[in-house]
Length: 278
Image (cartoon, rainbow, N blue to C red):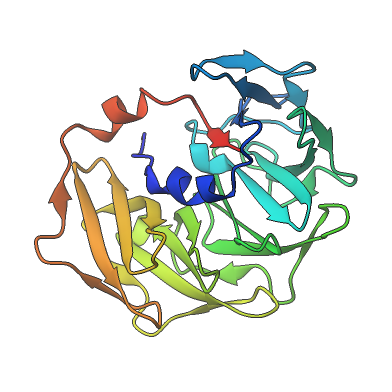
């Protein structure tokens, strides 16, 4: 089932865009031999394919749908990395991003194991703002995996204690802009989970988590001020809006859930598949 993609996901990220060049990346989710396509954003907003694109991930794409949460970026110091999920074989491929050309170079050791192969997997990825951690989940398991990102190479290694129980089939991840919390759509429990992120990347549910949603929560976002959280549920025409407390707790705002103007499927069709802007 298609989900609504939140604009704030991009709005927060664009604070880190480099003025000279902007790039767009898509996880093509190709079964068998997955690829990532890379584009330069032209002055008029059009896209031009970067030389060498698409770039092979070395894994197998596919899954039950195409989801923009299956690709993300991480910046640590002067190095920029891109991570793409290979849904069918439950792996993650890392790439080094060339700041000047937008071209991609596979991180040594890719693709990295991230679960048990399942053709029905749909992965969700989220990186911490400081580029230290990558979080991953898929909608056919009840765990969230946390990885250290090597600042030197971009290689992934699971943090101690990973995977962490989410308590439900999970889809949709978002790390808050202050790096303190991970918000997750708990699809099979009609709720949203909030986890505090430890100094080593370990996840701990905040008091009161999980918080009830109006349906099968499958896409989540948090504003840049980290005082509002948003949840879109599969098959629902409503969006849950929560006030987010300093401890990560969620309280529905007055009038929540709110009706959106169009079904998620029609809104999503306007966007490129599995897109990430850099």
